[in-house]
Amino acid sequence: MSDGSSRGLDRLERRSVGVTGASGYVGGLIVGSLRERGERIVEFGRRVSSEGGECRPFGLGRPLEAGLFEGVDVLIHGAYDMTLRKPAEVWQTNVVGTRSLVERACADGVSKVILVSSMSAYEGTRQTYGFAKLVCENLVRRVGGVAVRLGLVYDAAAGGMVGSLRRLVGLPVVPVLGPDAYQYVVNADQVGAAFTAILNDGRLSREIIGLAHCDAVPFRLILASLTGGSTKRFVNVDWRPVYYAMRLAERAGVRLPLRSDSVLGLVHPATVVPNFTVWEELGIEVRRAAFLEVGDA
Image (cartoon, rainbow, N blue to C red; front, side, top):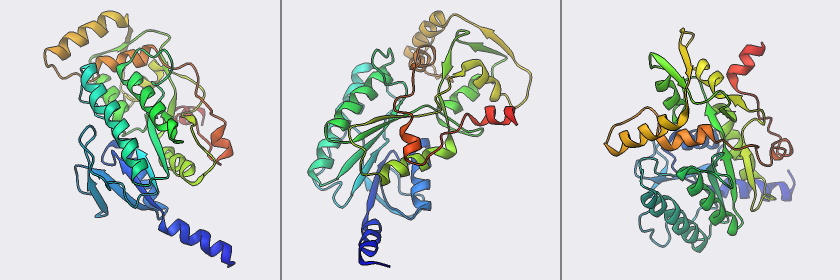
């Protein structure tokens, strides 16, 4: 092996990747993929690492001590508090918290921040969640970071939004929020590999990249794929009364299978997957949704 190759290997072995939100569904996919590839992982969160690795205390929106990210080369920021409902609380915790994180990471010597964003984050979004992610994207890109907008992460046994939709199809009658509703979908088994590819490409800076197949999938078809083959009655409904009824229920403290803010994302999705061609350049083939592939077989 040449001296140049040895230096490259040594640099890879020394690299430390920090991940916030590692205990969440998407964070777990990313951490699992990085571990399989031999990366040194530092998890930031309130729980101890399930793999016995290094974990540092972290809470989004809480004060960050100097040196928290010391020794971390690249930080993947996936933490987001989905339990908050009031816009002011969402802003203070998730947006102001991300601004503090970016500032602390830069001060501690982190070379790049990669944000786990969402396809809900686009100019003109009506979602509180989408708007918060959009602002966080700008915070990360200002310091040369990259924002990865995840589509609907699909797995037959997945958590996240698909887990919420699975509870929805458990109802006796399944509401379809408009005949034209659709989503862009990414298979869960591709998420980790995609983030690893971005991690390994030093050219990407200030980019927004959509991680989903560029073909939109009708919302009704997504719901049908989650029924487990059981016969269900699907009914098209006007999303507006459903949305406002859900908001009232949430204010009364009722726990629903789907958040009212998520309804806005389902009925007002993004119109395009940004920079989709980047994946081909990175050697990643973003496949169609798994249930569509089965249907084509």
